[in-house]
Image (cartoon, rainbow, N blue to C red; front, top):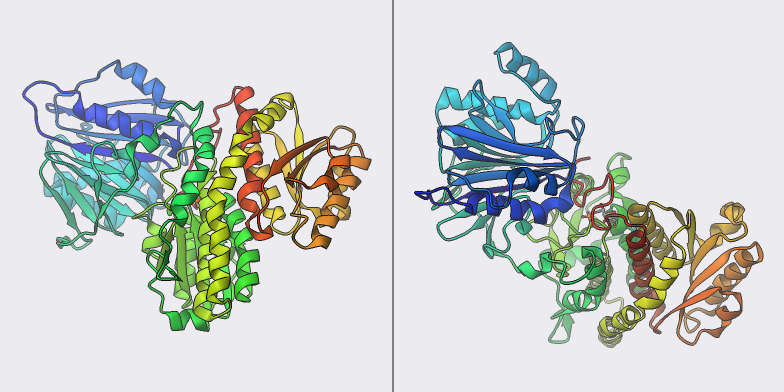
Length: 622
Ligand code: F6R
């Protein structure tokens, strides 16, 4: 939530476009984090120049003109997802700080004690022009700068007074060429360039300028100039060996590449994305994970697994439960991270917590990870974003390797999360001896087929798109599934709600008769996800009965079924086919028509598929 970018480059004799170019390009790639308003600040000689506008980045671009220049060497930028204060020009960032507006600051997060700070600063004669919590931080840093004359020291002293979560970036009239930043419970990474350096909420902010990054830890302050990056801790001690890493994301991944939307592109990338998640996992006949630093003896002793995640990632977790319990025989619970944390869960040293998160920054999940570790549990993170908080604060990490996901609605990361859960399940089964090596090899062999099978589903996207176009006026759609089809139904409904703004609900098919069937009336569209007829026969038969039941009550039945499954045909208005695979692997295929359906429906309705209303990609507030 909220995207932040910072740049420090060389001082040019003439005004230059570079600082504003970097800031605006960075904001364009971070806009998925929030798009209520956008703004930039630069230093123009003695003046700190702030330009900001409510609405999308385009509004800011229009005010700045075609090739905006600056006389200075630094720029900071911000794209906002509103928390305190409406999305207006005045509440947009950057905020001026100081009696003369000598500082500009951008903020991501929530400052919990802002009201007290604001009262204190107003008593000192500082003038507030917005309703935001962030403006208090701007004046606070400016006041400390006046006291110390050193922007780094000022940032450190100011952040010591702040409660809550924040990433802050500031520039000051008296520190030309310098951007100072700090973070607590909110993301910040540094990009290391040649003769220029960068700051961002994530590496997307500067991925086309450098492939080298630095992780910034809790409560550290980082001072960035064209030639130097200095990291200090809360006491002002220099961190001499901050963690460096290479960015493995290609800048092209952050472009639409001819698709109408990032979501469409990311859906169509899923075959290769999943192949990347699977790549190189078997070495010398055994399964290898990325940072699996939990001792095998600990993994052998665990007696319970709790999967924590939110939204789509939680649906991936629900699929994981079926696979892990089946292969490892370890009781596995799946819980929304925000519910887990506040209900006093039973967690011991024998509990393995699996945290699933594309961004690695979801605050609800991060807080749940901390809570679990405080109780002595070991935490394994399944994440997409290297250097993000959740894997860094976990005992072990397994990365999805699906590349950057830009669209707010998660698609390829969802498949990556499911694959990563399978890999973890198989790894546990290997370590604990639940499965023989040849059984694991056979399962891996079938998993290796999945990318080609995903491609087969994608090759039939036309059929689904036609269906979506025909249903553009639908006002409510139901989704039914059993077993692993149930989380798929939930995911299909979530996709439709979030990007097409259509009322949608996913149900366990067996639950239908216990209430939801009352919703079914003439013409009600109902997607039904049918398990393989080659799996457990009773499971297949039960779902075919469900199709009959809703059809008998007038539903329009939209059925996702395996190729060759003729049992569904008499009761289906539309059948969408997926290739045959193991029942447990089917969610990797059956969700794809549902993703395409939502994407196309939103597109024909003329909606902004990549940036749906009220949402932001990375939910970094609780
Ligand atoms: C839905 C969606 C969200 C996220 C959720 C968790 O399409 O994207 O529901 O899945 O906010 O985000 P991560 O995986 O980043 O923790």
